[in-house]
Length: 255
Length: 255
DNA sequence: CCAAAAGTGTTTTATATACACCCATGA
DNA sequence: TCATGGGTGTATATAAAACACTTTTGG
Image (cartoon, rainbow over the protein chains, first blue to last red):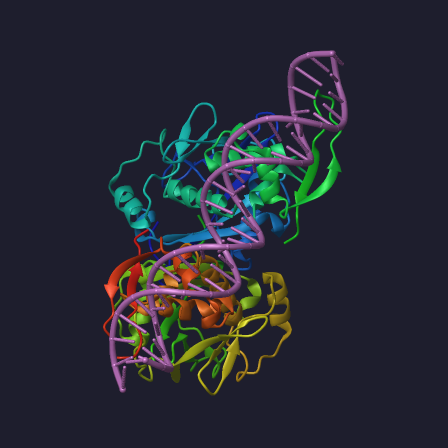
């Protein structure tokens, strides 16, 4: 595609990291799509859309969720991550990405199609230097580089294998996303919205686990409750048919 | 792929909050310019520029600094704040702002001109609900609203007085900026770059003071040192000709 | 009554706050 | 040697971490 428009400004792209939680595997997930167009044809990538003239970026992010998963959400589930404008991030044309994160209250089945050849949930894990996302067959990981310049310097030189790497700078964007969520875990854990309206403390610890790179049973429930009870509101008790004392349920406290 | 038509995507604007420190008044300052074109002609505003096709947003922010103050800076003095895309933020045309912050190592004299009818330093203070910025004649303040929707709802209805209010949503952008700096004061106080290469603990406390909404002498030097010494590197002692023990000087520790 | 799941309490340790005291310099 | 500016130390309060213990359910 040839540059450019009259204004000589880059294209504006919305990139959305869509988070969910699988209550059977107790794992945090993100949505990845397999690209069906150039550039990076055949690569897995974060869902993207171009921004339209008569919408805000937040609205575009929500439209993307509706297009990909057919789920209408309120703005309270979406937040801005950052804007990525490095010149090396797109081959050929200049495109900048406004990155958002959406926290789905459940994990819907994915329909095929919608402009991509495939769309799947990838469950989150962690390694020493990075976070991992796997669908059982393929595993991708967040960028290792710690600074933007380091990342793009490597990135521009590399010829990426589509079975090991995501399209564009999406491994960098994902790194920024995971770091951001981790930093907000102790004062504004919006990531818990993936648990739906109510959750138990164990649910919450299972969400925290990969971000803290700590197994769930290593996160002490007593201490966890004490340090986070300002963030949660008690909503009563569950009635589940299983051995053991029923757990209390909480919701995120209003800021 | 759509979007190559300029009518289908908003304009991209770079807004830069340029911070400095006045060593005679011991006050933190920001640069404001008086607009000389529509919209908001005659209003004071944050410095802005349109983004060019062959530059990153970070480069555009640095170009803006060079145009406004004639100072060539490295990227390490600039950081991204957020991107503002609300539909109500610009009358008529849709324009989104990529907001950056630049921390100048000193406070240069401002030359007139450069596309604005005036450009001045405004020194920072604080009131109960907001931060204030004054040049001695006029005082502007950061937005009072606590959420984005609240701010823009009020903003769209108001007919703003140019002697009391900044152009566009700049009072909101400034609020986000001050809040961000405040939050990072205890783990990544880049705002201290306004003090130049070296600074004393008292200098640092004078920068912290308005963000914490606390008078300098209420910030205990002993405790301040203990809780921030991981962030600072000792660089020796000053030799100033004034009564009192010479202060140690520090620089920001490398992350 | 036992095992499983969850919640409570206590001790230890680290960090934050308040405040008293000591040191180095110029006049 | 005194006032001024700056650094050091201690005692107290508060919060974090580790871990032992009690409660509630199903079988």
